[in-house]
Each structure stands twice: as structure tokens, then as C-alpha cells.
Amino acid sequence: MTIYLQMLGTGDAFSTKYYNNNAVLQDHGYTLLIDCGVTAPQAMKALGKSFQEVTETLITHIHGDHIGGLAELARTPSQEPHGKMTLLLAETLIEPLWQHPLLEPLHRKGGARSLADVFNVKPLKPDTPYTLSPSLTLELIRTPHMPGKASYSLLLNECVFYSADLTFQPELLLHLVHNRGITKILHDCQLSGRGQVHTTLRELLSLPEEIRKLIMLMHYSDEKPKFEGNTGEMEFLEQQVVYRLPDCRKDT
Ligand SMILES: O=c1ccn([C@@H]2O[C@@H]3COP(=O)(O)O[C@H]3[C@H]2O)c(=O)[nH]1
Ligand SMILES: [Zn+2]
Ligand SMILES: [Zn+2]
Image: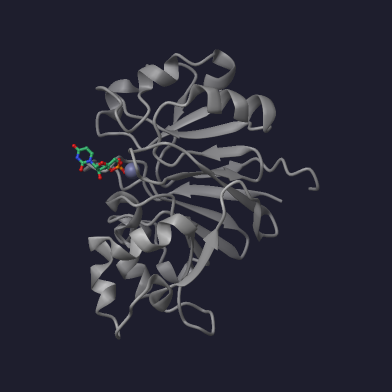
């Protein structure tokens, strides 16, 4: 079965041309929203979509461009009997997310005292595969982003790596391709400057060709047009374009 990926946005946290790096994955009747940044409500509207179409929302880490739209998402009535939107996230993120200033508007919602009061929270364990829908599996891998801040990249259908913002991890990428059967890497990319909390284009270009040709670039700055044609084998992922994702699960 085929699943489809559509980036709501492919911009970094400061982009004015691209929406936040958030995505929707669709498996027939099931829609997974991957991260819900400040621009997510507007980006959904730009696609003629609404949060009501979202079945579940996954949060990779706690930065405004990944969580800033959650207050609006929480206000959307879900189709479920409990009426709450479902949030998937690593257990370690639950309390810090609730305490984040961007979620403060929800603290005033009918005396809510925890994330579970405003969302149907499903805690996930890293390194554990979950079946989200008939054609979609997910595994979280904790990856380094900012010191002391938990952040989780994704393995989708056992063969697609979706980076939460992360610093350059060449050994991890080689391991994923050689030992975990990864055939597609969607990677955040800082186009210029020193990469303190993100992976830079220069770093990605230093990878072996066999890895570079699997990579598509996302979470980039407004300078992107200047870099077109200068990214080797790596293509830019474009916001709003629908991509088919490979499904390498052994039993399909
Ligand atoms: O000069 C700076 C650089 C960065 N930052 C924050 O660090 C975050 C890194 O991850 P992100 O890309 O999801 O979002 C970024 C911003 O939230 C900032 O506030 N000011
Ligand atoms: Zn980000
Ligand atoms: Zn981040």
C-alpha cells in the first residue's frame, strides 16, 4: 500500500518564505500530522485542509516551529468520543511540553492541569516500532539537537528516516543505511553558517555518494534559491508537493 507525504512547510524557524517544517502523512483514511508549528494552522489552510482531517499528531521536539500550533489544534473537536485530538510523543516530552509558554493558553482551558486534560496523549517509547495505520509504522530514535533537550527523529515504514532537527550524525546515517535498510533520508539542512544545532549543507556534502543520493533536504532558510544546483545528488523537498513514500515492511 502506498502512503503519501506532503510537507506543510519546509522552512527553518526564521523563514518568511516557507512555512514551518511540518508534514502530513496520509494512508487512505488515516492522516498523521508530524509536528505542529506556529505556522501550521495557516499552512493547512493554504492547502485547503483543516485540523479536523488530522487523525493523530506526532511531536518530535519542543521548539516553536514544531509545537506553536498546538493551542489551536487542541481547540479543534476530534471525531473521537472523548472529543480530544490525539498527540503522540515520547514520554520525556510530555511534561516539558505542558510547561512550555506556547501552551499557556491551554492552562486556562476549563481548569486543565496536564497535557492529558487537553489532548488524548499517547506516550511512545523510543526504539520501539508502532503500527499507526494499516500501511504506516513508526519508530522514534532519540537524536542530538540542542544540549539537554530531548529530540526524536523518525523511522517510517522501516525504510524512511525523517530527521527531527539534528546535528551532523554521519555514523548514525551510515548505520541506518547499512544495518536498518533505510532507503530514503529526509534531513534538516542549514544552508550556510556554522551548524551548532542543525546539520549544515557542507556536512551533508561530505557524506559518501551512496548516502547523499538517498537524501532530500528540508528545514532550510530563505536562501534556498541561491543553493539550487549546489547540493550534489541531494534534492530539496518542496512544501505542498505530494510525494509517494516507499514501504519496505517485510510483510507487505
Ligand atoms: O539565533 C537563534 C538560533 C536558534 N534559535 C532557536 O533555536 C532553535 C533550534 O531549532 P529550530 O530550528 O527548531 O528552532 C530554533 C529557534 O527556536 C533562536 O531562538 N535564536
Ligand atoms: Zn525546527
Ligand atoms: Zn528544533
